[in-house]
Length: 299
Image 1 (cartoon, rainbow, N blue to C red):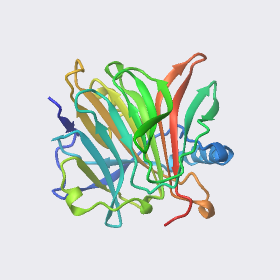
Image 2: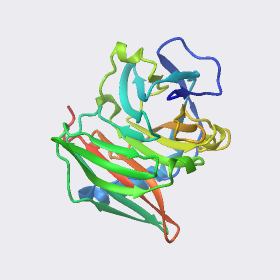
Image 3: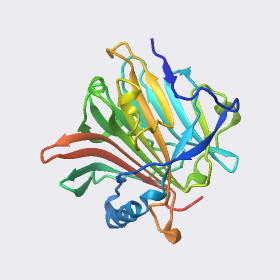
Image 4: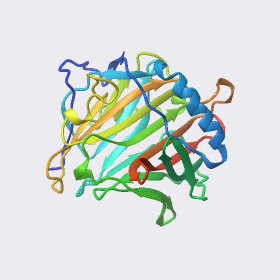
């Protein structure tokens, strides 16, 4: 069996392909992001984001129970315009998860390793930028716990960064990835045919937001992925993931958060940041891979 199932504790939902959403109260932690040439700027943005953390809001949506195929596409609508933000793919014969964000038309990627130990953060760039929107950078979380960042170039894939995170069968509500998406109005518009697909989850945001944050948690039960942003909070989107190689179903809880921009008003540029893996390292810290993609000029 290779079914995916969206879950929700709410039974009522709109018949429209775009679900109406509301705002819930949350307490947020830190954002993790980097680009080698702009580390100082992003660190300053992170400090600012922590100061305004209380202004960030968890999006609460009524997502019905339903079975999906091997893909989940996340669509968010503002002012009646649905835009594709990110997609999750699941390998057919293994419990491998792929996170892709091809909808912004990125001009430049930077990839590498993030480390946090004792409150100190360090970023190691691979030293190899990917300067084209036609070379999609893929992030994968494999059943073994290996987390990879790869880029497709001609007929070969090149590994840019990797960490060893917990194997998928051992996840118990672990944080497995974070997406930071800025410039929401610049993402690709979803077509009506795409919205009708059962693998698409569409949510109408209750208010305009330049920045959207999506955090993903994985565990062996619904309860393990709940309560990540305060007691009683439930994921905006949930997926029940079944594979023959797993001893029991894997639950993915995706929390979608409308948040203040990480960048200054007069210096904003559409960008996307993916951080994933979270390998434990000596000293009580963690290590993760990151991908920072940006558009050099708004189009």
